Amino acid sequence: MKNNIRVQRAIKNITQAELADMIQVSRQTINTIESGKYVPSTVLALKIARVFEKPVEEVFELEEDD
Amino acid sequence: MKNNIRVQRAIKNITQAELADMIQVSRQTINTIESGKYVPSTVLALKIARVFEKPVEEVFELEEDD
DNA sequence: TATTAATGTCAATTATGTTTTACATTTGTT
DNA sequence: AACAAATGTAAAACATAATTGACATTAATA
Image 1 (cartoon, protein in one colour):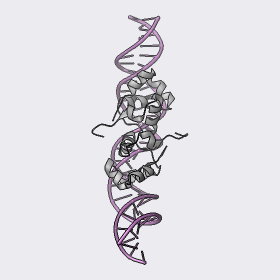
Image 2: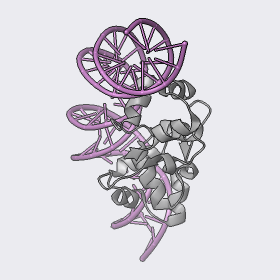
Image 3: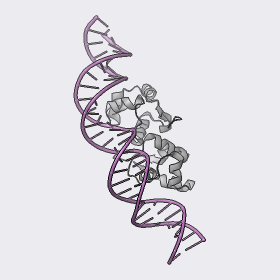
């Protein structure tokens, strides 16, 4: 699974810490999701996509090995 | 988080076991997700939504307490 | 260059998702 | 009623997500 959170953050001009605050998780959670270290739950994916005003599919994308 | 997997399955007329096979998880995983016992990972949500040919947001929905 | 903001990372811990096996219950069909 | 298919459920084990706190590094700016 890949994501483009970094790009979406840039578009909205918000930091990892700000995004973390908005969806009530730790900054490390955002950091590790963004860097692909782990796959978030659907609750987080929906919240993140909602912040960016994009469908989940535009922020998170399945890869071959998923 | 709530979901309407049961409805989507009915539309496509597939069983829990069939859905499980399609996305390579156990039938119990489908059963417990469908009955709201736990929230799936984003990988599973994307795969499930893809089977139903619906955006993730149409299958999984955030609630107040999420 | 010095300072601050932002990001990266690590270790430890807790919480949650997922699998497996197995059995019980419900629903549909003959 | 009997049988089969589908669904519900439970416990144990394992895998992964998420938090916390702390510190290192990089980027931006005065």
